Figure (tube, helix red, strand yellow):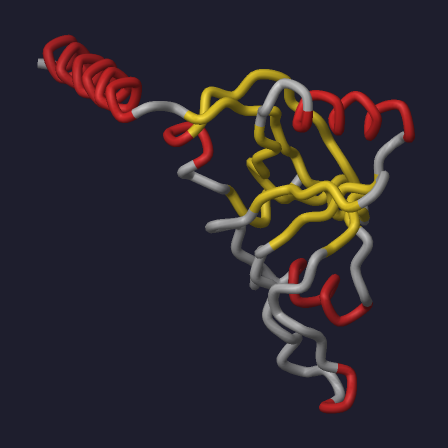
Length: 147
């Protein structure tokens, strides 16, 4: 399993609960671009349109060696491939409970490209300060143990 992109801000901005894995519906040039590592999940999110889920605002630039006529839009919405029962439960969580679907990482499993995303609740600024305090305390303990 090769990790292609990570959303580093996800765990800092959101309290992540349940994690899910989904396939992505991509074109051929997008697949080549993603597998060469040209992808960014910064600012990306999962949206609900009808009874389907889409990865929105993720940046996949055109493949450099592709034919000029086959270029795609960089930040278009890409459909997530999930089972219908999972889609229904996620739509319920996002609409009824007011939770957000946050992409965490993009990776390959065998030759397929998968997206790991989580159901998250937005953190307040004081929650973020607590996270920073815990992280710095862990670093201080690690430094003390080494010396």
